[in-house]
Each structure stands twice: as C-alpha cells, then as structure tokens.
Amino acid sequence: MSLDNILNHWSDFRKGAEEGGHHKYEHRWAMAINLDLCTGCNACSTACYAENNLAVVGKERFEKGQAMHWLRIERYWDQPDKEYPEQGASFLPMMCQQCGAATCEPVCPVAATYHTPDGLNAQVYNRCIGSRYCSNNCPFRVRYFNFYSYYESAWPQPMEQQLNPDLSVRDKGVMEKCTFCVQRIRTAKDKAYMEDRPVEDGEAMTACAQACPTSAIVFGDAMDENSMVSKLWKKHQVERGVYQQTKNAKKNADLRGYRIFEELNVDPSVMYLERVRENV
Image (cartoon, helix red, strand yellow):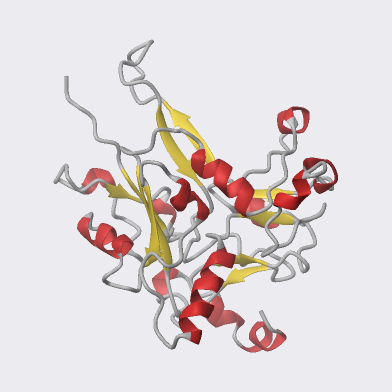
C-alpha cells in the first residue's frame, strides 16, 4: 500500500461489510470446501509447505507453540455420546479465511497487513515489525510468527533447491499466513493481461486445491458468475455481507454451505459444505 493510500484513502480501505466494504475489487477470490469429500490426508497441507517455502520448526519448537503451517487439518468428533464413533473423526481444513472485514487489518500499527483489490488480506513482510496484534485479533488463529530464523535449519543441502523462487523465505520477527497462493494468482493475471483477455476459471489455482486427491477444495473468482466457486456459493445460498445466515436456519438439508464464525460479521471468503451424515 502506498503512502498516498494510507493518508488519503485509509477510511475507504477500512470500511466494514455493513458499510458495503471496499468496492474497488478487480477480483474476489474465494473457496468452497466440501467436508464430505475431505479424508484428512494432509495432501493440501504438504502442498502448501512446498509451494510457499514454509519452514519445518520441529517437534520441540512445535510443543512450545511455535507452529508454522498456513493450512492445518482440524480433527473433531461430532458423536459425543459414543466412546468410539462409528463414523470416525471428521476433518476440516483451516487456513486464512481472507475476510472481507478482517479484524487483523485495522490493528496493525504499520499497515503491514491490508486489503487488496483482489479481496485478499495481504501481508507485507518487510514492513512487519512483529507486534503480533494481528494474530491476537484473528478469531481463526491462522497467523504465525517467526520466533527464530527457521530457514537456517529447515532446508539442509540440497533441499534448499526445492524452494519456490516466486516468493521470499521469511526471517525471524515476521508474521506470516496463507495468501491464497497469491504468486499463482499474479502469474495467471499477468498471462491474461498479456493475451488481452480475462482470467479464466481454473487458471489461478491454489496449491492445496490442486493437490487435493478428492477435489474437496474449489478455488476461483467469486465475481465471475460462471466460475465453479460462484455456482457452489449460489447453490448453497451463502451470500457475502449477510452475517446472520447460519446452517441451522436453513430448512433444506441439501443446503450445506456455511462460513465459520459468520456471526462475527468478518465476511470470510471460505465456504464450507457440511459433512453428509446417514441417519442410522
């Protein structure tokens, strides 16, 4: 974000969903995750590590709360009345929800995190001073702090050759999080611009969506009415800027779409499709 935007347009960037939000969007990248198809295989998480140069912190540091994963698989058991649930655990991929009214953005003292014209919550690494206010304000707990220079031991030779040259390796003192693989989005947009055409559906795809063996993750531009993700949001009647819609309020069992913490009015860009359960 330029200094001009900070001084003259900051109030526009900070508009909440109830005020109509920041309207100068070029795209609105969004996801639909079908929990009925998710097997918890962690292929999405592994692909995220490889694509985004995520350092492995190791067991000891992980136990101290220094986890570093932009996408994690949450496990839960929704049959509390049974000691050994017949249907086993359920899984839920959790990453930055790229909120339209993100609570992490206005608390950053140096504007290191801000809203982009693509509807993403961007993170400027070389501006971040490590205050961690954004992490404290995130209801999803999907922001991660570099307590040490993890890169020094994460990729012993020759593993450093696998690093993705399209984005940097973060050093200590910097907050980081899922970007919806913004480097891939930029590549798709640049190619479309050079060929003087709009970005086609499926042309920009996150690493997690590409790696998912069951195609549980669908990614695309929500401003494109013909995109798969737009059709899924519409099919399950999940709308932006409507913070009181809940899965329990829907009478039709086929409408499985919902957004996590929707009641907080943060306008997440990730819609989940509830797992289908058989009534025994």
